[in-house]
Image 1 (cartoon, rainbow, N blue to C red):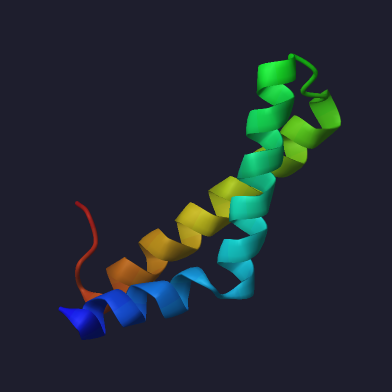
Image 2: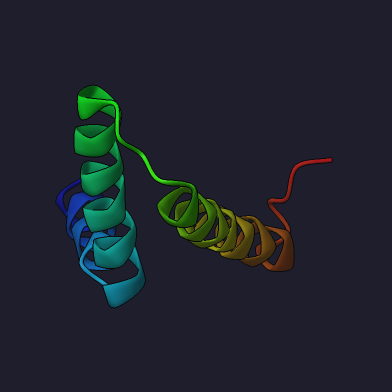
Length: 67
């Protein structure tokens, strides 16, 4: 159990995850203020799609893909 938690924490601390988490925090703040710009929304959408797309591809390569 401890090994699983350590492995997940290590994956969370990779650069890709940190950038995604930081952008999500910025998006949340801007959304609460009501001033999410179109340029930011475009960049955020591309980064989120890339992040989850790479996770899905990694799972598919391991044989645990959906579908």
